[in-house]
Image (cartoon, rainbow, N blue to C red):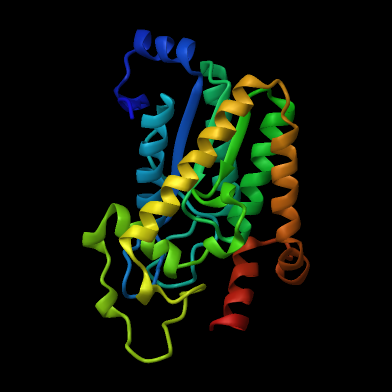
Amino acid sequence: MGPIHRYADLRPHELTDRLERFPVAIAPWGALEWHGPHLPFGLDGLVAEAFSEQLAAKTGAVLLPTTYLPITAVPHPQSIPFRAEVVRGTWEDLFLGLGAAGFQLVCLISGHYAQGHEIVLAEVAEWITRERGARVLAGTPLALLDDPALLDHAGFWETSQLLAIRPDLVDLEALPSGSELPVAILGQDPRSATTGKGQAVIERAIGAWSGWINRLLSEDDPQPLYDLYSERRSSYQSYVEQYYDGSWDKALQTWWTEHLG
């Protein structure tokens, strides 16, 4: 692992040097949303930031500060959602700005992966890649492992990842001892989460992201990105058809009420 080159810390000549050596930017993305009684509100951003730091140290990419700006946070009074058009515009400006600065590839690593958030992110990332020249590889830390079971919410895998990076913020004793778990926990039971499992899956995912980065830099072919975003949209198609009617916030509220409310 090498040093971490943080965009906010670099002076102009240092950024120019990084662009000549390795023109890749990494942007961690999170949310402030409810994850049950055992996890902090900032889990998504904390995981994305720690993952991005490891990836930046491994590859030499420039690391941006973490942004907490989710589309469709869990509908809980203490979650903080943002309008989809605000987040879409922010992503467009970010990707365009980094492309204008000289980055050939932007990796947006989103710890938050609600349906609307993922769909809009895929749309923006593909549009920038197709129309504006700068390639965008966007997804969750574990998305490139191609295993949907890893993408839970406040369950075994999210809890294990946070145990691996910030064990002081995990309180498994806050969970009930019976068979029922609080709403918002989707996936395997988090009470069996372990630091070792979290560390192992993070290491696998770092390898997957590194492989994609090297491939996209060495090959003049964006088709793998188009295929990736097409597959992601397809995986959410039934959700869109059933719940989306012009508003991602309303779609999530309907889904939440039907499944968990």
